[in-house]
Image 1 (spheres, rainbow, N blue to C red):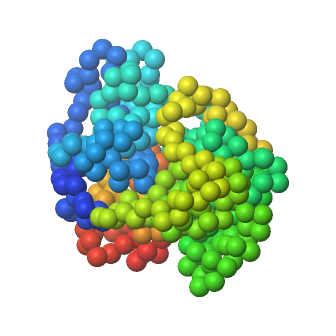
Image 2 (image 1 turned 180 degrees about the horizontal axis):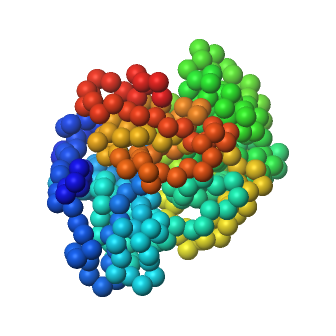
Image 3 (image 1 turned 60 degrees about the vertical axis):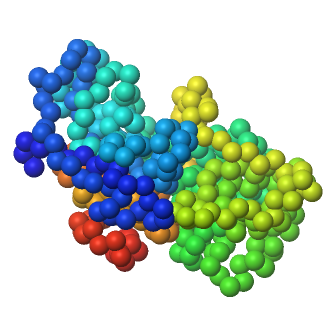
Length: 380
């Protein structure tokens, strides 16, 4: 809309599911221009907004590894953005940048400390990978396994949420390390997808025989458990843990929308089996990001890591519905690697090979605020 720009702010803290039109509020503000810039600043427009489960934690009334988003504040989020005006000698109009300071805004003014220039894409990369395997998603998998899990050749590694953004990468890294990898997902289609990625065993936790299948899949018990789900899956893994096993506590997506989260019932196994359960946040290893990215880039170029992505066309107007969709199970669809919103100005969305391995899929979400409809109601 000419002369205005859209921002999305937190309106209230949800006690359960995010409710489109209630949890967040959309605000139209006057557009910014070059004359508004001070020395060293840039003006950017959002190309892609990355959506991730951590956003649910950011809107709780408690600080996590980031301060809680306050009521009335712009919702936090990582973006890939294009420079539209610059008073910074190191940045030119048309450059692409990454920032966690833009959040849910169509445009923003940034100081030089609030962004980094997007790196050149190497072989095998799509532009969307800059918010995925090359960013926190891939780095979480990388550091969780290499700093905490330490998988060894022949060990059994179990990944929960294995078809999701982090889980799918974690499983592939465990295979690179020579481990036997078991993935837990929520559909037979997702089982097929992670088998394509090289997982040795794929289990559907919705199968009536899942528990017996899980026992059969872990005859030598579990050496490393990379947990993205929590809840009952974590309890089951505790009961199958090997002596001195390592549990990488990456996330607990099954609990984020619960008004009364359930704690582990089998925690006694942690002492009986001398399990090490360690939580972590990827920024704990910020000093090592560059080295990790170089290694990940090499694996992608060699074909050892494969990714897929879904881009939702519709911009910030559909951000609320898309974020809630992360918790419906849709984000871990076998075709989904990580979820983005594309700017309404789709001319700046630049995946280079739209049909290569079906890695980047486009989806247009209706701008409905009907909170009764989840993403799985659409052909997503």
